[in-house]
Length: 389
Image: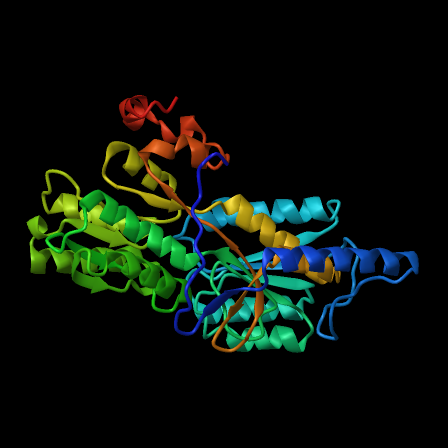
């Protein structure tokens, strides 16, 4: 990817702590020592099966990986994340590994049932993006009791999680908040509305904390809402309430936690008769959000490299099932604490602010969308103006 990325050491937030596990020098020394030990063991015919009795039995390439996603409203899950996970698992296992997929469509009880069914089907490992991080804990415990590792994807689930692959979520919020301040300027005269994510999603709290770290004392936050289940319908109702209370002329910008919320916000503002939509943030780089950015209806979105995240999760899952602890540790150079489990091995991928200026260097360069997909007939002139061709 040609886009420049920004990375900070994340601060601790309530309930979830993120830490760097070791310095670069220690990582190098440990890796060298581990490699030497691995060579010695291989010479003696000994196979590495992990660090403790909790590691899964070593398997070959004929593995089954369960994948559970939370909803279909977030378009990236079924368009990009799952296909990339499935493809990478096939590549890593010489096409012998298979995946089983289920989507809970926002229902935590459905997701618990799906996870428990995968345990009953004796999959080798489960990758889960939780609908509700707390409610899924009993099902995660069921998997752990059956000796099936669980890797949390995107959202940190509670319970005995064996690994975590996500983005630096507080940094996502910082990127969103910083983008607004850079566009508006540092002035308390600027009044914004905050449209946050779902209270059941721990990532939403991190996005919000990150955004507030950039917005507080630099703008006036006139109204703030949480969006149940990340539902655009809920976001629309909340934004209509904000417009009715504040008046559309008293909203200088909107912090929208993701692109689904951003789309709802922009629809409400247009219906209210704004001559020019004020800056609105987003996240996930949905195709319609990229097109809104092209025509100036949405200011920015946060692009997160879905192929990178999906590949990391697949690699972590295969290494865990096959008992390759050295490779697993190399993939998980960070660690996180959930409210129930400490020092969960983690890989955190940095996000990128996507604006009109770097569409080609991000989603096009990564093969997420082609120029043809973006530049449909309604967006031809905007694409030409942005030199996207």
